Length: 410
Image (cartoon, rainbow, N blue to C red):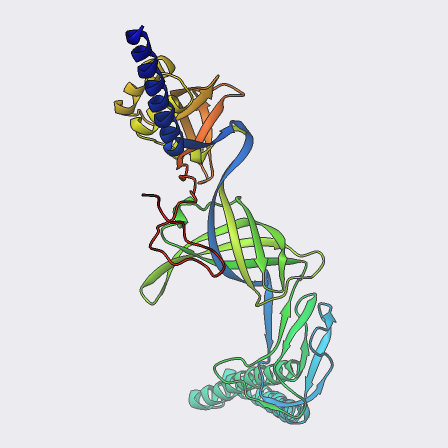
């Protein structure tokens, strides 16, 4: 009878110890936060970014080939002009005087030629009858030829002066819009070695282009025909579309940095874009749409064996039974374009080899290795529970006013 009571006491004590141990373990038992995702249809794009400047595709600088004073200007900034339209007029007075002077020279040369021709014909007739010496004949022939050359030269100068007079009227060479007017009425322009620019005309503002500076590290990915999106500071929330039309081979060096100029054609039907605007371009060097993609976090998720084992134990699954020996894949060297992902199915975790293609940093193109609907582990974080607070306090700590200190019993 006494022995029976001893067994009962031992059983009660063992139960109490087990209960305490269970509470202690539950107070420190770890929980896990697991994030999952799935493969889905999506798009993958590789891009190159750069900065450039907007300008009209065709821009013509209109100048003057003669010096003079600007007498009249017929257009201003932003004026729409047609080809052949009169833009400005120089003072014609000095140019007209040169024309009149050269005309007089021509008249004089013609009169001289008439005289020398008559003299030559008379001298030749006498020489043919052997009535004069050959030297007299040669002199008459020389003067006749000289008069012909003088008339030809006088006409050439006269024609040049008439052309210069026509240059006093400045016409538009193309249809377009005046972007810049560099002169005012009454201003003197001097045409020497460099033709002074009076007006700048853009041919068609509905078609613009961006001159972008692309870093040498990125230029190998850019090609003619690629799609481009860009923004400008004037419309930061609006994306404009364009197409790469030219990749120039000539390098540009600025502060020891090599860049290459890329031309992007940009339609401008609503005339929002203006010359000189700064454009921040994004060139889509590679695009794949409507393909199966894997989240990049799933590819980069690479937990150690201990974390996986703790997680499986926390949900009551033996590691070996759950993984079926798949941990061995951790030590397999991936093949080309091969990666590993963790798949959760029915509470179990399985490490699978997948073959991936291009990526944009966020998603990877899935080539093979997974099925639609597979649940991929993106992250697994161990979260330890904090011990609950107790009401016990030290008898030596001060008590708030109005409360009595508990006195330990002896």
